[in-house]
Amino acid sequence: MHKQRGLILVLTTAVIVGVAGFASGWFVPTETTVTELAPGVWFRKTQTKPEFIGCNQGWVIFKDFVLVVDANFPNQSEVIIREIRKTTDKPIRYVFDTHYHGDHADGNVVFDKLGAVIIASENNRQLFDTNGIAGFEKSQKEKPDEYGKLKYKKPDLWFPKKLVIDDGTQRVELIHFGHAHTAGDAIAWLPKHGIAFTGDSCVNGAFNYTGDSDTESWIRVLTELGKLPIKQLAPGHGDPRDKKLIAVQKRYFVELRQAVQQGIDDGKSLEEIKSSISLPWYKEWTGVDVQERTENIEHVYGELTGKKAAK
Image 1 (cartoon, helix red, strand yellow):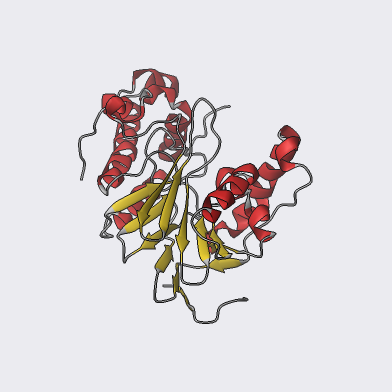
Image 2: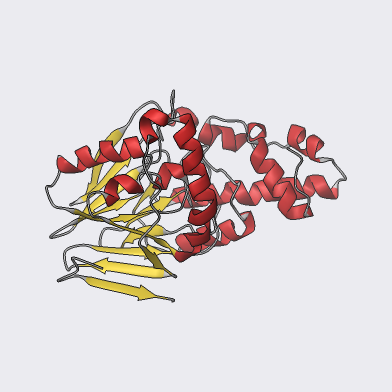
């Protein structure tokens, strides 16, 4: 790797709560905002309605360079570069993809042109090679004005369990706890500030896509995440919040699995489970009825029975 002088770079192998109402201001889906969470630590919350334009992002300003959390779509990569330039003229040296999904990683090519090193958990490697590039090529056909003739860019540096970037002014620990939203999920933990950028391992709202997930393992990942002394949590989608968001996210998967298992034990069909499942608090949190997340119910049913739902 290049440009690492003066930098410590370390690779190693090594409660259920109530929720406030959707209208309480946890997140405003029509707004994109940029906030400085701590000195040199920035968070961009990206709008999701009326148009979903991508994931949340962050950046950390070190002494001589910048680290970006999540590349987003190509057009949003261009936007965040402009936002970063409002805060610093230091070079963007690293981009950390929390996972392979296009709204988090398709913009890698934009940062690569700036000379940035793209980093991800090595458990993402196969996913980038298969689903990632397939999704990118699909987007090229569907969004030619944005993707054009861009070439897919995979990460340059893979880490097994943990990677630390520390130059004495800032410290970022990239940590893979296990299979959650995807097999390769990782977070960015800033211990000096108590800030965690969680990607889609923990989100604030109805963004709990389970298609690549293992929800039993996801619960364990959230348990481990909850052991960190987090003061501020910057999720992959939705507004930032405090550590209590982890318990809310965990509650959804625990109770969803319990409800689906109860339906199975009662001899109900998948369709009967989908039409009868009820988690009123989930709508209070997300603004969406739990029954509307049919793909998540189908996914959990498949996990618990070994039967994939017919598409």
